[in-house]
Length: 357
Image (cartoon, rainbow, N blue to C red; front, top):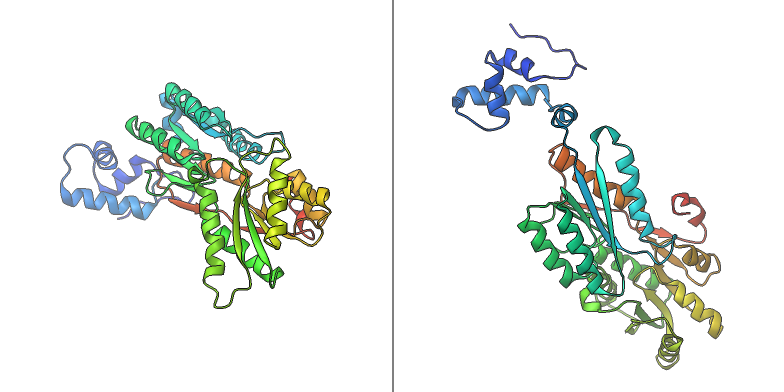
């Protein structure tokens, strides 16, 4: 005769033992894969566990052990309070605040977006505190690869956010598919610009080390490469420094000499193109960029930018810390690739993205 289990009742090891007609100790050995258990008995217990959808009471065991988890984040320093990289940490803090009963701790580290050495310095600080898990933006690929090896040597699991290094041993990746994002941007610019040359601008240093920007460029170029008929010539320009007006002169020269009609900016600094348009009184360019920064939204509303690709950075931070929590604290399996949506934002719908204001 089967023992009835109430539908909404928390399933206990005792319930499994009674159903299998074995001791609690035998069930415990099967659950933790330790000790000798007859194969037939083990199979029977595993079938009952699956049938009852048994989930360990992680909260009770966590509280009983009086051990909380410490997670670290290693993200770029935002240049202002409204900068792109201020958003993921808000998502991280939001998820941590939802789990007070687990006593989770978060340690935040930030590095300069213009200095790879600062990444190394902050990465060493992360290693020194020996966290239980890390949320990492592999902004500088070379430096990040060295840091990742140290994390693996110390058996510290990590989740990528915003950009990904393939086959690096990470638990999960949270962010856009950068290559697909580049394809989308190429298609959009192609649709609004029937003919005319296009300039792709990277406002960044050490482009070979900026994996996500490289992937966006590849996707963008490949959109036009696969077309049977192409009325566009594509050019790429790297702008490592915007501290003087020299970069404006460089872009202006490219626009006039190469008859540029469209511009694609691979990161959140598309507002620099808006400043250039104001200075040179350019009103016929078609421009696409990334991220709902205050300055970018202003350019969008002024028709200086036609489309912004939104990456939902706060959602990325929230989901990244949640993946660590579910894997490390709840000991659940998690999905490897977690691509966020590629949102196309226009002047007409930007006001409905209230979470970015």
